[in-house]
Amino acid sequence: MTQYILRRLLQLPIILFGVSVLVFLVLHLVPGNPALAIAGADAPPETVAAIERELGLDRPLPEQYVLYIGRVVQGDLGRSLRSRRPVLADVMDALPNTLQLAVVAAAITPVFAIPLGVLAAARRGTLVDTSLMLVSMLGITLPVFALALGFMWIFAYQLRLFPISGYGGPIWTSDGLRSVTLPALTLAIGAVALLARLTRSAMLEVLNQDYVRSARAKGLREGVVLLRHALANAMLPVVTVVGLQVAALLSGAVVTETVFAWPGVGRLAVFAIQARDFPLVQGTVLVIAVMFVLVNLAVDVLYAYVDPRIHYG
Amino acid sequence: MSVVAAPAGSLGRRPGVGALPSPRGGRLVQRFIRQRAGVFGLAVISCLLVVAVAGEAIAPYDWRAQDVLARFGGISPQHWLGTDELGRDIFSRILYGTRFSLVIGLGAVALSFGVGTALGIVAGFYPRLDGPLMRLVDVMLAFPGILLAIAIVGALGPGLISVIVAIGTTEIPGFARLNRSIVLSLRQREFVVAARVLGAPDRSILGRHVLLNLVSPLVIFASLRISTAILAGATLSFLGLGIQPPIPEWGAMVSTARQYIATAPHTFVYPTLAIFAAVIGFNLLGDAVRDTLDPTLRA
Image (tube, rainbow over all chains, first blue to last red; front, side, top):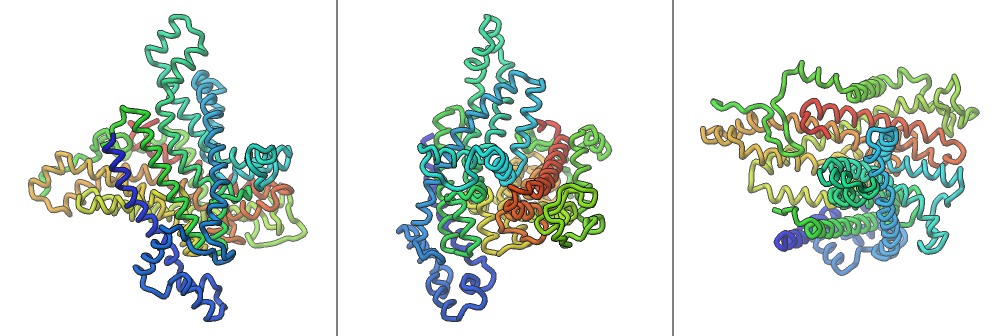
């Protein structure tokens, strides 16, 4: 296992290098002259030349990359073309908001998903089971933006339970808690649906085992059988899936944040692209990707500890 | 030349890539018809295909035709799904928008199918190229979900081709990995080893023994990815990065409707239902194709 972790750690620099190259090249995908695209078609030549100099576009490509990565490792992601603020400052302002949203979403996922999955498994084949599975199918299939707008319409416009959009402050304040509810719910719903289905199938598998029959035979109450004997053993495959959720949370955050005007990195990335603010695009995408790689690594290493049966060849 | 013929579709029972000896076409059709959900999915998609081709001819109104006096109209005999903020007929617009979602879904999957399959076969067949190619795939997987597509479409600028390229690119790693893993397992199989021992050139081994055995798992995987691509396309348009209004791509319609959600929720409900129908249709069809070609994979 140590070997596996070491190998993953050794791969990390290669992946990060590749990510930085890809992010760097994004600017060069811009058709024609990127500086012209940024400045606008009717900008004076001096402005275009100034942008070219600022982005280093007047140098050969490998040299540009070396300059770029040299600045990145020193924490200099360039300056936003619109606000003229350092990109890193913008990203760092937005990052805690995204993390807050993701953590709340990740926390509410098992709270809803596991009881629903257990209930569906315990009532297998009944109306309860069928309708739960049907609803979970909706949760997986509906686009995130449709869920977001649906929640907004029902809970903010019709019932007026939560604010329509925006950031209400830290989560421990009542305004903060109310403002995070709808975005977090939107973000969590896909994962809730998936996890509920998985819990159900894992439970069904375990409920056929001999030890569950024995537990019932010795007269334990059904609740104890379900929770202590079945659920505890059904959790392993479920835990494995939670890691996959990280990707869903980060990419779902892009849409959710945009709909709910939540000031996180996802919304920042969309805003940057709409404004054709390429240093900001590169900075946000780079930070999100690096975060994603590190979290994935941490999750994989964690699994190696949690489930010693897993062999990493 | 080939003394040893490849047993078609005998891939071992590796989870996710298994395949049974392929029955004849007639048996496959029978097996497919028995899956009612799949037949329903096929029906939905057939309707969408007809609408995609003939949408403008069927539509009761021109998708651009405005009637400012009839803004935000509800369901009526004249406007089956009501009208939007400019009094345009929502039903006609959804019909016209069908072609964009289908072209994006099919186009993006075709692109990733082609590039990903080529990458995966090369990586699996030539060990020397395996490492570099798979690191490239790992790098692409380092971008969560739609983020890479957003970055690409942001650089290329909005438009149909950009969306297809962006989503197609993000789908490449999945196809590359699937192909690589199958080719790797095929390389060990007796019939490939035998062909090699008999002196068959790489070209004939690839063409006769490897490609044939890739068909079934690839068809299964591709059919399941179309709905993902359609969703991604609608999402890009919703974010204002894909197909732009006034073109009634479904995601773009929802994006516009967002401003009027408090007063006219119907402008957002129907395009959403259209997306949902397409996604469900392709999902059901994909599941049925999987169960038809390889019943051992049934969940």
